[in-house]
Image 1 (cartoon, helix red, strand yellow):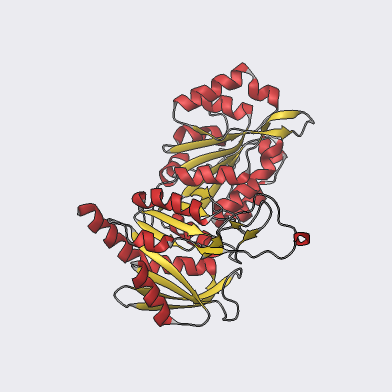
Image 2: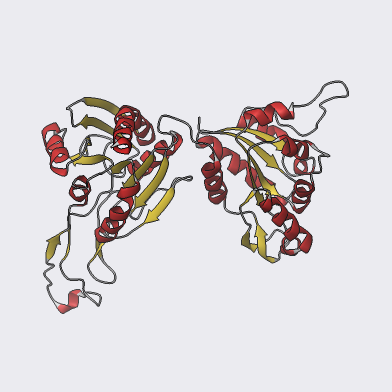
Length: 404
């Protein structure tokens, strides 16, 4: 479990977006309990949140004249973080001044850990001196703010006030959660996706990699408590929230970033499909077939994995071998040639496996010749299994490196 979150929903038109915030937080492995203001129920029925969260939703402090509501102090012992999204001007004012006249306000005063708010309101309300003062007051107390975005508002005006994008809210939330899991505190670097080597201003040399496996590894490492950096080429899948993402295009750009990032990593999974070749000369103008035949002269790209393996000291290094067949000998030879600690072998010709597919089948082989076969499964599931298989070696390597 990644974390335990109380999601506060206040009464603005953006309240419907909190459904997606809830779903994404749960998808990332969190447990979420929802507290709504009475005004929020005018926009969304509490049952929607109850079904999605699998927990009762708190609206009233008293469920009936004789039955108490949720024990706010008990929930505060349970929760890692309070997220209020959307946070209306009214709710921000109550939080700033400690007003506890509803379930959310009462819980806010009982909450004892991180607080994050994502305001949403009309531009004029957002810019009002009272709102600005309330935001400043909350910031001074350590409350984190996800500022509203600019754009078309529900009232028809255009300006600041829209609820920040869902992925931005979730990303900020995940970064504030305490680190738990087998890799808690371990710094993990993952490279993913293809590189693109320019031929001219229009054309590139690329490959079919979607980046799905690398992204899955980054998300799985995050879920196990690691501090994750994802260095990626152009991806065909969404970037995972809660990790630091660094986009690049070419192998040279990826190499420059690796040179800086490897010194700050405890483990590195080099899953990117880096181009082996690139044009020796890049045309300044677009090439035109009407100009006649053109020979494209290629040169090899520096071996980024071998350069990583030659570093001293270096992180626990995992390389990937995409083979046309389960060629374990070739994969082991690649691991040794790169100076890596482990290699992930997959047969890209096997049914349902390889680049661009949602599933894969892999063999995890380590430098002590230990082999683990992971049968075909969704790449997200495989990523978790790969990390579980290697977690012990990663932790041992990190501890040895720290002590030496």
